[in-house]
Image 1 (tube, rainbow, N blue to C red):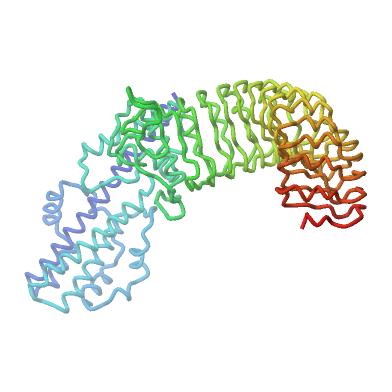
Image 2: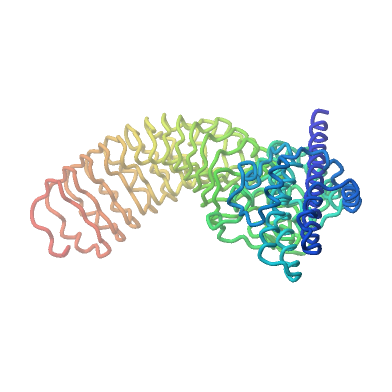
Length: 619
Protein backbone atom coordinates (compact mmCIF):
# COMPACT_ATOMS: atom_id res chain seq x y z
CA UNK A 1 0.00 0.00 0.00
CA UNK A 2 2.87 2.35 0.82
CA UNK A 3 4.48 1.61 -2.53
CA UNK A 4 1.22 2.30 -4.36
CA UNK A 5 0.92 5.62 -2.56
CA UNK A 6 4.48 6.51 -3.50
CA UNK A 7 3.87 5.68 -7.14
CA UNK A 8 0.61 7.67 -7.16
CA UNK A 9 2.40 10.62 -5.63
CA UNK A 10 5.03 10.39 -8.32
CA UNK A 11 2.28 10.49 -10.94
CA UNK A 12 0.77 13.58 -9.32
CA UNK A 13 4.19 15.26 -9.42
CA UNK A 14 4.34 14.67 -13.14
CA UNK A 15 0.82 16.07 -13.59
CA UNK A 16 1.75 19.17 -11.55
CA UNK A 17 4.91 19.54 -13.61
CA UNK A 18 2.92 19.31 -16.82
CA UNK A 19 0.45 21.96 -15.64
CA UNK A 20 3.24 24.31 -14.60
CA UNK A 21 4.99 23.87 -17.92
CA UNK A 22 1.76 24.65 -19.81
CA UNK A 23 1.24 27.75 -17.67
CA UNK A 24 4.74 29.03 -18.40
CA UNK A 25 4.34 28.37 -22.10
CA UNK A 26 1.01 30.21 -22.02
CA UNK A 27 2.69 33.23 -20.46
CA UNK A 28 5.46 33.11 -23.00
CA UNK A 29 2.86 33.04 -25.78
CA UNK A 30 1.01 35.96 -24.21
CA UNK A 31 4.16 38.07 -24.10
CA UNK A 32 5.07 37.05 -27.64
CA UNK A 33 1.70 38.25 -28.97
CA UNK A 34 2.08 41.50 -27.08
CA UNK A 35 5.57 42.16 -28.38
CA UNK A 36 4.87 41.24 -31.99
CA UNK A 37 1.68 43.28 -31.91
CA UNK A 38 3.60 46.21 -30.49
CA UNK A 39 6.29 46.05 -33.15
CA UNK A 40 3.80 45.81 -35.99
CA UNK A 41 1.76 48.59 -34.49
CA UNK A 42 4.71 50.94 -34.24
CA UNK A 43 5.68 50.42 -37.85
CA UNK A 44 2.10 50.87 -39.03
CA UNK A 45 1.20 53.91 -37.02
CA UNK A 46 4.51 55.77 -37.54
CA UNK A 47 4.57 59.12 -35.79
CA UNK A 48 2.14 57.93 -33.08
CA UNK A 49 4.34 55.01 -32.05
CA UNK A 50 5.18 56.51 -28.66
CA UNK A 51 1.52 56.80 -27.69
CA UNK A 52 0.76 53.34 -29.08
CA UNK A 53 3.63 51.82 -27.13
CA UNK A 54 2.20 53.39 -23.95
CA UNK A 55 -1.15 51.79 -24.70
CA UNK A 56 0.48 48.52 -25.69
CA UNK A 57 2.26 48.20 -22.36
CA UNK A 58 -0.59 49.39 -20.11
CA UNK A 59 -3.23 47.63 -22.21
CA UNK A 60 -6.92 48.48 -21.79
CA UNK A 61 -9.45 45.88 -20.74
CA UNK A 62 -10.78 45.29 -24.25
CA UNK A 63 -7.27 44.63 -25.63
CA UNK A 64 -6.57 42.18 -22.79
CA UNK A 65 -9.84 40.37 -23.38
CA UNK A 66 -9.15 40.11 -27.12
CA UNK A 67 -5.67 38.66 -26.56
CA UNK A 68 -6.91 36.30 -23.87
CA UNK A 69 -9.64 34.97 -26.17
CA UNK A 70 -7.14 34.34 -28.93
CA UNK A 71 -4.85 32.47 -26.54
CA UNK A 72 -7.72 30.29 -25.24
CA UNK A 73 -7.22 31.61 -21.71
CA UNK A 74 -3.76 29.99 -21.39
CA UNK A 75 -2.70 32.72 -18.97
CA UNK A 76 -5.91 33.77 -17.28
CA UNK A 77 -4.16 35.25 -14.26
CA UNK A 78 -1.62 37.35 -16.15
CA UNK A 79 -3.23 40.70 -15.18
CA UNK A 80 -2.61 40.01 -11.50
CA UNK A 81 1.18 39.86 -11.57
CA UNK A 82 3.17 42.56 -9.81
CA UNK A 83 4.86 45.17 -11.99
CA UNK A 84 8.60 45.32 -11.16
CA UNK A 85 9.07 48.65 -12.90
CA UNK A 86 7.86 52.02 -11.78
CA UNK A 87 5.96 54.24 -14.22
CA UNK A 88 8.95 56.59 -14.28
CA UNK A 89 11.30 53.77 -15.31
CA UNK A 90 8.86 52.72 -18.03
CA UNK A 91 8.72 56.23 -19.41
CA UNK A 92 12.53 56.43 -19.44
CA UNK A 93 12.72 53.21 -21.42
CA UNK A 94 10.10 54.43 -23.88
CA UNK A 95 11.94 57.71 -24.48
CA UNK A 96 15.41 56.19 -24.99
CA UNK A 97 15.10 53.99 -28.05
CA UNK A 98 18.86 54.01 -28.56
CA UNK A 99 19.73 52.70 -25.10
CA UNK A 100 21.82 49.51 -25.21
CA UNK A 101 21.55 46.28 -23.26
CA UNK A 102 24.81 47.12 -21.47
CA UNK A 103 22.97 49.85 -19.50
CA UNK A 104 20.53 47.47 -17.82
CA UNK A 105 19.60 48.11 -14.23
CA UNK A 106 20.42 45.56 -11.55
CA UNK A 107 16.84 44.21 -11.70
CA UNK A 108 16.91 44.13 -15.50
CA UNK A 109 19.97 41.84 -15.48
CA UNK A 110 17.99 39.10 -13.76
CA UNK A 111 16.76 38.00 -17.20
CA UNK A 112 20.30 36.69 -17.84
CA UNK A 113 20.29 34.58 -14.68
CA UNK A 114 17.30 32.26 -14.99
CA UNK A 115 16.59 30.26 -11.86
CA UNK A 116 14.31 27.34 -11.15
CA UNK A 117 13.06 28.95 -7.96
CA UNK A 118 11.76 32.23 -9.52
CA UNK A 119 8.60 32.76 -7.58
CA UNK A 120 7.37 35.65 -9.74
CA UNK A 121 6.95 34.10 -13.19
CA UNK A 122 4.70 36.96 -14.26
CA UNK A 123 7.41 39.49 -13.38
CA UNK A 124 9.91 37.52 -15.39
CA UNK A 125 7.68 37.52 -18.49
CA UNK A 126 7.08 41.27 -17.99
CA UNK A 127 10.86 41.82 -17.99
CA UNK A 128 11.16 39.61 -21.06
CA UNK A 129 8.55 41.74 -22.82
CA UNK A 130 10.40 44.93 -21.94
CA UNK A 131 13.67 43.49 -23.19
CA UNK A 132 12.04 42.66 -26.51
CA UNK A 133 10.43 46.13 -26.75
CA UNK A 134 13.82 47.75 -26.14
CA UNK A 135 15.27 45.57 -28.88
CA UNK A 136 12.58 46.72 -31.29
CA UNK A 137 13.26 50.35 -30.27
CA UNK A 138 16.94 49.87 -31.11
CA UNK A 139 16.05 48.48 -34.51
CA UNK A 140 13.49 51.21 -35.07
CA UNK A 141 16.12 53.95 -34.83
CA UNK A 142 18.04 52.34 -37.67
CA UNK A 143 15.22 51.55 -40.07
CA UNK A 144 11.66 52.90 -40.38
CA UNK A 145 10.83 51.11 -43.61
CA UNK A 146 8.29 48.32 -43.89
CA UNK A 147 10.86 45.97 -45.35
CA UNK A 148 12.39 45.71 -41.86
CA UNK A 149 9.19 44.25 -40.46
CA UNK A 150 10.15 40.63 -41.10
CA UNK A 151 13.61 41.05 -39.54
CA UNK A 152 12.25 42.77 -36.43
CA UNK A 153 9.46 40.29 -35.89
CA UNK A 154 11.82 37.33 -36.41
CA UNK A 155 14.37 38.70 -33.94
CA UNK A 156 11.67 39.31 -31.35
CA UNK A 157 10.20 35.80 -31.80
CA UNK A 158 13.61 34.16 -31.49
CA UNK A 159 14.39 35.98 -28.24
CA UNK A 160 11.01 35.15 -26.74
CA UNK A 161 11.10 31.48 -27.70
CA UNK A 162 14.70 30.90 -26.54
CA UNK A 163 14.16 32.50 -23.14
CA UNK A 164 10.81 30.74 -22.66
CA UNK A 165 12.40 27.41 -23.54
CA UNK A 166 15.29 28.04 -21.16
CA UNK A 167 12.82 28.91 -18.43
CA UNK A 168 10.79 25.71 -18.80
CA UNK A 169 13.84 23.45 -19.15
CA UNK A 170 15.56 25.07 -16.18
CA UNK A 171 12.50 24.95 -13.97
CA UNK A 172 11.78 21.31 -14.64
CA UNK A 173 15.17 19.86 -15.48
CA UNK A 174 15.31 16.18 -14.56
CA UNK A 175 11.63 15.79 -13.59
CA UNK A 176 10.41 14.57 -16.97
CA UNK A 177 13.50 14.34 -19.20
CA UNK A 178 13.32 14.06 -22.98
CA UNK A 179 9.71 15.33 -23.13
CA UNK A 180 8.93 17.02 -26.41
CA UNK A 181 6.62 20.00 -25.84
CA UNK A 182 6.58 20.93 -29.48
CA UNK A 183 5.00 18.00 -31.31
CA UNK A 184 3.09 16.11 -28.63
CA UNK A 185 -0.63 16.50 -28.28
CA UNK A 186 -2.19 16.24 -24.86
CA UNK A 187 -3.46 12.77 -25.73
CA UNK A 188 0.01 11.63 -26.85
CA UNK A 189 1.56 13.01 -23.68
CA UNK A 190 -0.96 11.20 -21.51
CA UNK A 191 -0.38 7.96 -23.43
CA UNK A 192 3.37 8.24 -22.98
CA UNK A 193 2.95 9.05 -19.31
CA UNK A 194 0.70 6.04 -18.84
CA UNK A 195 3.29 3.86 -20.60
CA UNK A 196 5.99 5.32 -18.35
CA UNK A 197 4.07 4.47 -15.19
CA UNK A 198 3.28 0.92 -16.32
CA UNK A 199 6.89 0.10 -17.21
CA UNK A 200 8.26 1.77 -14.09
CA UNK A 201 5.83 -0.11 -11.87
CA UNK A 202 6.72 -3.40 -13.53
CA UNK A 203 10.43 -2.76 -12.93
CA UNK A 204 9.78 -1.98 -9.28
CA UNK A 205 7.41 -4.90 -8.78
CA UNK A 206 10.09 -7.28 -10.12
CA UNK A 207 12.62 -5.60 -7.82
CA UNK A 208 14.86 -5.13 -10.83
CA UNK A 209 15.99 -1.66 -9.69
CA UNK A 210 15.88 0.43 -6.56
CA UNK A 211 13.04 3.01 -6.56
CA UNK A 212 15.48 5.86 -5.91
CA UNK A 213 17.51 4.97 -9.00
CA UNK A 214 14.50 5.61 -11.25
CA UNK A 215 14.07 9.21 -10.14
CA UNK A 216 15.00 11.25 -13.17
CA UNK A 217 16.54 14.02 -11.08
CA UNK A 218 19.31 11.61 -10.15
CA UNK A 219 20.34 11.25 -13.80
CA UNK A 220 21.10 7.59 -13.13
CA UNK A 221 21.70 4.88 -15.72
CA UNK A 222 18.39 3.39 -14.57
CA UNK A 223 16.41 6.59 -15.23
CA UNK A 224 18.07 7.04 -18.61
CA UNK A 225 17.30 3.42 -19.52
CA UNK A 226 13.67 3.79 -18.45
CA UNK A 227 13.25 6.93 -20.55
CA UNK A 228 14.84 5.17 -23.51
CA UNK A 229 12.51 2.18 -23.21
CA UNK A 230 9.45 4.42 -22.84
CA UNK A 231 10.07 7.14 -25.41
CA UNK A 232 13.12 6.61 -27.58
CA UNK A 233 13.31 2.89 -28.29
CA UNK A 234 11.79 2.48 -31.74
CA UNK A 235 10.86 -1.10 -30.93
CA UNK A 236 8.28 0.28 -28.43
CA UNK A 237 7.88 -3.03 -26.63
CA UNK A 238 4.58 -3.59 -24.89
CA UNK A 239 4.80 -2.97 -21.12
CA UNK A 240 3.60 -6.55 -20.57
CA UNK A 241 6.13 -8.13 -22.95
CA UNK A 242 7.94 -11.00 -21.15
CA UNK A 243 11.33 -9.78 -22.41
CA UNK A 244 10.93 -6.10 -21.57
CA UNK A 245 12.91 -6.34 -18.32
CA UNK A 246 15.86 -7.96 -20.08
CA UNK A 247 15.89 -5.18 -22.67
CA UNK A 248 15.73 -2.65 -19.86
CA UNK A 249 18.65 -4.33 -18.06
CA UNK A 250 20.82 -4.18 -21.17
CA UNK A 251 19.92 -0.49 -21.56
CA UNK A 252 21.02 0.14 -17.97
CA UNK A 253 24.25 -1.72 -18.71
CA UNK A 254 24.75 0.50 -21.77
CA UNK A 255 24.18 3.77 -19.93
CA UNK A 256 26.41 2.61 -17.05
CA UNK A 257 29.35 1.50 -19.20
CA UNK A 258 28.96 3.31 -22.53
CA UNK A 259 28.01 6.89 -21.59
CA UNK A 260 29.17 9.55 -19.20
CA UNK A 261 27.17 10.73 -16.19
CA UNK A 262 24.97 12.92 -18.41
CA UNK A 263 23.96 10.01 -20.61
CA UNK A 264 26.10 11.11 -23.57
CA UNK A 265 28.47 9.00 -25.63
CA UNK A 266 32.10 10.02 -25.25
CA UNK A 267 35.44 8.89 -26.60
CA UNK A 268 36.47 7.83 -23.09
CA UNK A 269 33.59 5.38 -22.82
CA UNK A 270 33.82 3.92 -26.32
CA UNK A 271 33.57 0.16 -26.63
CA UNK A 272 35.67 -1.87 -28.99
CA UNK A 273 32.48 -3.24 -30.53
CA UNK A 274 28.93 -2.11 -29.81
CA UNK A 275 27.23 -3.36 -32.96
CA UNK A 276 23.42 -3.04 -32.90
CA UNK A 277 23.28 -1.93 -29.26
CA UNK A 278 20.42 0.47 -28.47
CA UNK A 279 18.82 0.07 -31.88
CA UNK A 280 15.28 -1.02 -32.70
CA UNK A 281 16.61 -4.51 -33.47
CA UNK A 282 15.96 -7.33 -31.06
CA UNK A 283 18.70 -7.59 -28.45
CA UNK A 284 19.50 -11.13 -29.61
CA UNK A 285 21.33 -9.40 -32.48
CA UNK A 286 23.32 -7.05 -30.23
CA UNK A 287 27.05 -7.71 -30.01
CA UNK A 288 27.92 -10.17 -27.25
CA UNK A 289 24.31 -11.13 -26.49
CA UNK A 290 23.40 -14.76 -27.16
CA UNK A 291 19.84 -15.95 -26.69
CA UNK A 292 17.99 -19.22 -26.62
CA UNK A 293 18.08 -20.42 -30.24
CA UNK A 294 14.96 -20.35 -32.33
CA UNK A 295 13.70 -23.54 -33.95
CA UNK A 296 16.16 -24.95 -36.43
CA UNK A 297 18.92 -22.49 -35.56
CA UNK A 298 22.38 -23.67 -34.49
CA UNK A 299 23.49 -22.79 -30.98
CA UNK A 300 25.03 -19.32 -30.51
CA UNK A 301 23.37 -17.99 -33.68
CA UNK A 302 22.43 -14.33 -33.35
CA UNK A 303 19.12 -13.15 -34.76
CA UNK A 304 16.79 -10.14 -34.75
CA UNK A 305 14.49 -10.81 -31.85
CA UNK A 306 14.07 -10.87 -28.10
CA UNK A 307 14.31 -14.10 -26.14
CA UNK A 308 15.81 -15.60 -23.00
CA UNK A 309 19.42 -14.43 -22.76
CA UNK A 310 21.78 -17.36 -22.23
CA UNK A 311 25.12 -15.58 -22.50
CA UNK A 312 26.51 -12.08 -22.22
CA UNK A 313 30.05 -12.12 -23.55
CA UNK A 314 31.81 -8.75 -23.71
CA UNK A 315 35.31 -9.87 -22.84
CA UNK A 316 38.18 -7.64 -23.97
CA UNK A 317 35.74 -5.00 -25.20
CA UNK A 318 37.29 -1.96 -23.48
CA UNK A 319 34.44 -1.57 -20.99
CA UNK A 320 34.99 1.06 -18.31
CA UNK A 321 32.94 1.69 -15.21
CA UNK A 322 33.31 2.08 -11.47
CA UNK A 323 30.33 -0.17 -10.92
CA UNK A 324 28.61 -3.19 -12.41
CA UNK A 325 24.86 -2.51 -12.73
CA UNK A 326 22.81 -4.84 -10.55
CA UNK A 327 20.09 -5.12 -13.18
CA UNK A 328 22.16 -7.73 -15.02
CA UNK A 329 21.78 -9.91 -11.93
CA UNK A 330 18.14 -9.11 -11.15
CA UNK A 331 16.57 -9.57 -14.59
CA UNK A 332 18.62 -12.04 -16.63
CA UNK A 333 17.41 -15.03 -14.65
CA UNK A 334 18.07 -17.45 -17.52
CA UNK A 335 21.68 -16.32 -17.93
CA UNK A 336 24.12 -19.24 -18.06
CA UNK A 337 27.39 -17.47 -18.89
CA UNK A 338 28.53 -13.97 -17.96
CA UNK A 339 31.89 -12.95 -19.38
CA UNK A 340 33.07 -9.38 -18.83
CA UNK A 341 36.70 -10.32 -18.23
CA UNK A 342 39.70 -8.26 -19.30
CA UNK A 343 38.00 -4.87 -19.03
CA UNK A 344 38.12 -1.99 -16.53
CA UNK A 345 35.06 -2.55 -14.37
CA UNK A 346 35.21 -1.76 -10.68
CA UNK A 347 33.01 -1.77 -7.62
CA UNK A 348 32.00 -4.69 -5.47
CA UNK A 349 30.35 -7.96 -6.40
CA UNK A 350 26.71 -7.23 -5.56
CA UNK A 351 24.73 -9.60 -3.40
CA UNK A 352 22.05 -9.65 -6.11
CA UNK A 353 24.30 -11.98 -8.08
CA UNK A 354 22.64 -14.75 -6.07
CA UNK A 355 19.55 -14.34 -8.27
CA UNK A 356 21.34 -15.78 -11.31
CA UNK A 357 20.30 -19.30 -10.37
CA UNK A 358 20.93 -20.69 -13.88
CA UNK A 359 24.50 -19.39 -14.04
CA UNK A 360 27.15 -21.92 -15.03
CA UNK A 361 30.07 -19.68 -15.98
CA UNK A 362 31.20 -16.45 -14.29
CA UNK A 363 34.17 -14.68 -15.85
CA UNK A 364 34.98 -11.32 -14.27
CA UNK A 365 38.77 -11.64 -14.15
CA UNK A 366 41.24 -8.90 -14.99
CA UNK A 367 39.10 -5.99 -13.85
CA UNK A 368 39.07 -3.80 -10.73
CA UNK A 369 36.44 -5.46 -8.58
CA UNK A 370 37.02 -5.02 -4.88
CA UNK A 371 35.54 -5.98 -1.56
CA UNK A 372 34.81 -9.48 -0.34
CA UNK A 373 33.50 -12.53 -2.15
CA UNK A 374 29.81 -12.48 -1.22
CA UNK A 375 28.28 -15.64 0.20
CA UNK A 376 25.33 -15.24 -2.20
CA UNK A 377 27.69 -16.38 -4.93
CA UNK A 378 27.99 -19.71 -3.14
CA UNK A 379 24.26 -20.30 -3.59
CA UNK A 380 24.67 -20.75 -7.35
CA UNK A 381 25.05 -24.50 -7.23
CA UNK A 382 25.05 -24.88 -11.03
CA UNK A 383 28.30 -22.99 -11.35
CA UNK A 384 30.99 -24.89 -13.22
CA UNK A 385 33.56 -22.17 -13.88
CA UNK A 386 34.37 -19.13 -11.73
CA UNK A 387 37.21 -16.82 -12.72
CA UNK A 388 37.59 -13.65 -10.66
CA UNK A 389 41.38 -13.33 -10.91
CA UNK A 390 43.42 -10.14 -11.25
CA UNK A 391 41.09 -7.97 -9.23
CA UNK A 392 41.29 -6.28 -5.82
CA UNK A 393 39.16 -8.78 -3.92
CA UNK A 394 39.91 -9.02 -0.21
CA UNK A 395 38.73 -10.87 2.86
CA UNK A 396 38.41 -14.61 3.26
CA UNK A 397 37.29 -17.32 0.89
CA UNK A 398 33.80 -18.20 2.20
CA UNK A 399 33.44 -21.58 3.89
CA UNK A 400 30.25 -22.01 1.84
CA UNK A 401 32.40 -22.64 -1.23
CA UNK A 402 31.78 -26.30 -0.55
CA UNK A 403 28.22 -25.76 -1.85
CA UNK A 404 29.57 -25.48 -5.40
CA UNK A 405 29.60 -29.20 -5.97
CA UNK A 406 29.52 -28.84 -9.76
CA UNK A 407 32.56 -26.60 -9.88
CA UNK A 408 35.01 -27.53 -12.60
CA UNK A 409 37.45 -24.58 -12.36
CA UNK A 410 38.00 -21.91 -9.70
CA UNK A 411 40.30 -18.97 -10.38
CA UNK A 412 40.78 -16.47 -7.55
CA UNK A 413 44.46 -15.81 -8.17
CA UNK A 414 46.14 -12.40 -8.10
CA UNK A 415 43.86 -10.77 -5.55
CA UNK A 416 44.29 -9.71 -1.93
CA UNK A 417 42.52 -12.63 -0.27
CA UNK A 418 43.63 -13.63 3.21
CA UNK A 419 42.93 -16.22 5.86
CA UNK A 420 43.10 -19.97 5.42
CA UNK A 421 41.97 -22.15 2.56
CA UNK A 422 38.58 -23.48 3.72
CA UNK A 423 38.52 -27.23 4.27
CA UNK A 424 35.05 -27.38 2.68
CA UNK A 425 36.73 -27.03 -0.70
CA UNK A 426 37.27 -30.76 -0.47
CA UNK A 427 33.54 -31.17 -1.24
CA UNK A 428 34.06 -29.74 -4.74
CA UNK A 429 35.03 -33.17 -6.00
CA UNK A 430 34.59 -32.27 -9.67
CA UNK A 431 37.34 -29.65 -9.59
CA UNK A 432 39.95 -29.92 -12.33
CA UNK A 433 41.60 -26.52 -11.95
CA UNK A 434 42.18 -24.70 -8.68
CA UNK A 435 43.99 -21.34 -8.80
CA UNK A 436 44.47 -19.57 -5.47
CA UNK A 437 47.98 -18.27 -6.13
CA UNK A 438 49.33 -14.77 -5.51
CA UNK A 439 47.17 -13.82 -2.56
CA UNK A 440 47.83 -13.46 1.18
CA UNK A 441 46.54 -16.88 2.23
CA UNK A 442 48.11 -18.43 5.31
CA UNK A 443 47.87 -21.56 7.40
CA UNK A 444 48.52 -25.06 6.14
CA UNK A 445 47.26 -26.77 3.03
CA UNK A 446 44.04 -28.48 4.20
CA UNK A 447 44.08 -32.27 4.09
CA UNK A 448 40.69 -32.21 2.35
CA UNK A 449 42.25 -30.73 -0.74
CA UNK A 450 43.91 -34.09 -1.41
CA UNK A 451 40.42 -35.60 -1.88
CA UNK A 452 40.09 -33.76 -5.19
CA UNK A 453 41.17 -36.75 -7.20
CA UNK A 454 40.24 -35.15 -10.55
CA UNK A 455 42.56 -32.16 -10.09
CA UNK A 456 44.78 -31.58 -13.11
CA UNK A 457 46.14 -28.12 -12.22
CA UNK A 458 46.76 -26.97 -8.64
CA UNK A 459 48.32 -23.56 -8.05
CA UNK A 460 48.86 -22.21 -4.54
CA UNK A 461 52.07 -20.31 -5.23
CA UNK A 462 53.05 -16.93 -3.76
CA UNK A 463 51.05 -17.01 -0.55
CA UNK A 464 52.06 -17.45 3.11
CA UNK A 465 51.24 -21.12 3.45
CA UNK A 466 53.08 -23.04 6.15
CA UNK A 467 53.52 -26.59 7.32
CA UNK A 468 54.42 -29.78 5.41
CA UNK A 469 53.26 -31.12 2.08
CA UNK A 470 51.20 -34.16 2.98
CA UNK A 471 52.00 -37.65 1.78
CA UNK A 472 48.41 -37.66 0.50
CA UNK A 473 49.64 -35.62 -2.42
CA UNK A 474 49.94 -38.96 -4.13
CA UNK A 475 46.12 -39.23 -4.22
CA UNK A 476 46.04 -36.59 -6.97
CA UNK A 477 46.82 -39.11 -9.64
CA UNK A 478 45.59 -36.93 -12.52
CA UNK A 479 47.66 -33.91 -11.56
CA UNK A 480 49.59 -32.37 -14.45
CA UNK A 481 50.73 -29.04 -12.96
CA UNK A 482 51.65 -28.44 -9.30
CA UNK A 483 52.64 -24.92 -8.20
CA UNK A 484 53.44 -24.64 -4.47
CA UNK A 485 56.42 -22.32 -4.81
CA UNK A 486 57.16 -19.10 -2.90
CA UNK A 487 55.44 -19.98 0.33
CA UNK A 488 56.75 -20.94 3.78
CA UNK A 489 56.30 -24.70 3.40
CA UNK A 490 58.64 -26.80 5.50
CA UNK A 491 59.67 -30.39 6.19
CA UNK A 492 60.78 -32.73 3.40
CA UNK A 493 59.62 -33.51 -0.10
CA UNK A 494 57.01 -36.29 0.42
CA UNK A 495 57.70 -39.71 -1.08
CA UNK A 496 54.09 -39.88 -2.26
CA UNK A 497 54.93 -37.37 -4.96
CA UNK A 498 56.33 -40.25 -6.96
CA UNK A 499 52.77 -41.55 -7.45
CA UNK A 500 52.08 -38.64 -9.78
CA UNK A 501 54.34 -40.09 -12.42
CA UNK A 502 51.70 -40.91 -15.02
CA UNK A 503 50.73 -37.30 -15.80
CA UNK A 504 52.73 -34.69 -13.87
CA UNK A 505 54.60 -32.36 -16.23
CA UNK A 506 55.54 -29.40 -13.99
CA UNK A 507 56.62 -29.44 -10.34
CA UNK A 508 57.29 -26.05 -8.71
CA UNK A 509 58.53 -26.17 -5.10
CA UNK A 510 61.12 -23.38 -5.18
CA UNK A 511 61.23 -20.54 -2.68
CA UNK A 512 60.12 -22.48 0.40
CA UNK A 513 61.83 -23.83 3.52
CA UNK A 514 62.01 -27.47 2.44
CA UNK A 515 64.88 -29.50 3.83
CA UNK A 516 66.24 -32.99 3.74
CA UNK A 517 67.49 -34.96 0.77
CA UNK A 518 66.50 -34.77 -2.89
CA UNK A 519 63.73 -37.35 -3.18
CA UNK A 520 64.67 -40.32 -5.30
CA UNK A 521 60.98 -40.91 -6.13
CA UNK A 522 61.01 -37.85 -8.36
CA UNK A 523 62.86 -40.01 -10.86
CA UNK A 524 59.58 -41.89 -11.44
CA UNK A 525 57.89 -38.80 -12.91
CA UNK A 526 58.51 -39.97 -16.46
CA UNK A 527 56.49 -37.18 -18.11
CA UNK A 528 58.10 -34.38 -16.11
CA UNK A 529 59.25 -31.43 -18.20
CA UNK A 530 59.98 -28.77 -15.55
CA UNK A 531 61.45 -29.34 -12.07
CA UNK A 532 62.04 -26.31 -9.81
CA UNK A 533 63.57 -26.91 -6.36
CA UNK A 534 65.83 -23.87 -6.00
CA UNK A 535 65.98 -21.57 -2.94
CA UNK A 536 65.27 -24.19 -0.28
CA UNK A 537 67.43 -25.97 2.34
CA UNK A 538 67.84 -29.24 0.50
CA UNK A 539 70.93 -31.40 1.02
CA UNK A 540 72.41 -34.70 -0.21
CA UNK A 541 73.54 -35.52 -3.71
CA UNK A 542 71.74 -35.46 -7.03
CA UNK A 543 70.06 -38.91 -7.33
CA UNK A 544 71.31 -41.04 -10.18
CA UNK A 545 67.69 -42.13 -10.83
CA UNK A 546 66.92 -38.68 -12.09
CA UNK A 547 68.77 -39.52 -15.25
CA UNK A 548 65.57 -41.32 -16.34
CA UNK A 549 63.77 -38.00 -16.74
CA UNK A 550 64.31 -38.00 -20.48
CA UNK A 551 61.59 -35.41 -21.25
CA UNK A 552 62.92 -32.90 -18.73
CA UNK A 553 63.62 -29.44 -20.20
CA UNK A 554 64.15 -27.28 -17.10
CA UNK A 555 66.12 -28.38 -13.98
CA UNK A 556 66.59 -25.71 -11.31
CA UNK A 557 68.48 -26.79 -8.15
CA UNK A 558 70.28 -23.52 -7.30
CA UNK A 559 70.65 -21.95 -3.82
CA UNK A 560 70.48 -25.11 -1.73
CA UNK A 561 73.14 -27.18 0.07
CA UNK A 562 73.50 -29.95 -2.47
CA UNK A 563 76.84 -31.74 -2.28
CA UNK A 564 78.74 -34.42 -4.17
CA UNK A 565 79.64 -34.46 -7.83
CA UNK A 566 77.61 -33.78 -10.94
CA UNK A 567 76.52 -37.29 -11.98
CA UNK A 568 77.22 -38.36 -15.53
CA UNK A 569 73.69 -39.88 -15.59
CA UNK A 570 72.37 -36.35 -15.96
CA UNK A 571 73.24 -36.57 -19.63
CA UNK A 572 70.30 -38.93 -20.02
CA UNK A 573 68.05 -35.84 -20.00
CA UNK A 574 68.07 -35.61 -23.78
CA UNK A 575 65.77 -32.60 -24.09
CA UNK A 576 67.32 -30.49 -21.31
CA UNK A 577 67.46 -26.79 -22.26
CA UNK A 578 68.28 -25.08 -18.93
CA UNK A 579 70.38 -26.42 -16.02
CA UNK A 580 70.91 -24.30 -12.91
CA UNK A 581 73.24 -25.72 -10.25
CA UNK A 582 74.76 -22.50 -8.89
CA UNK A 583 75.19 -21.61 -5.21
CA UNK A 584 75.48 -25.14 -3.81
CA UNK A 585 78.34 -27.28 -2.43
CA UNK A 586 79.07 -29.35 -5.54
CA UNK A 587 82.62 -30.55 -6.03
CA UNK A 588 84.79 -32.42 -8.50
CA UNK A 589 85.09 -31.76 -12.21
CA UNK A 590 82.54 -30.86 -14.84
CA UNK A 591 81.68 -34.02 -16.83
CA UNK A 592 82.85 -33.72 -20.43
CA UNK A 593 79.66 -35.55 -21.48
CA UNK A 594 77.72 -32.34 -20.84
CA UNK A 595 79.13 -31.16 -24.13
CA UNK A 596 77.05 -33.82 -25.92
CA UNK A 597 73.76 -32.33 -24.68
CA UNK A 598 73.08 -30.48 -27.92
CA UNK A 599 69.77 -28.93 -26.78
CA UNK A 600 71.33 -27.33 -23.70
CA UNK A 601 71.21 -23.52 -23.94
CA UNK A 602 71.57 -22.27 -20.34
CA UNK A 603 74.12 -23.69 -17.87
CA UNK A 604 74.82 -22.11 -14.45
CA UNK A 605 77.36 -23.73 -12.10
CA UNK A 606 78.96 -20.74 -10.34
CA UNK A 607 79.48 -20.52 -6.56
CA UNK A 608 80.35 -24.18 -6.02
CA UNK A 609 83.56 -26.08 -5.23
CA UNK A 610 84.14 -27.38 -8.76
CA UNK A 611 87.66 -27.79 -10.09
CA UNK A 612 89.47 -28.61 -13.31
CA UNK A 613 88.87 -27.09 -16.72
CA UNK A 614 85.73 -26.32 -18.62
CA UNK A 615 85.16 -29.03 -21.27
CA UNK A 616 85.88 -27.70 -24.74
CA UNK A 617 82.69 -29.28 -26.10
CA UNK A 618 80.63 -26.81 -24.04
CA UNK A 619 82.11 -24.01 -26.15
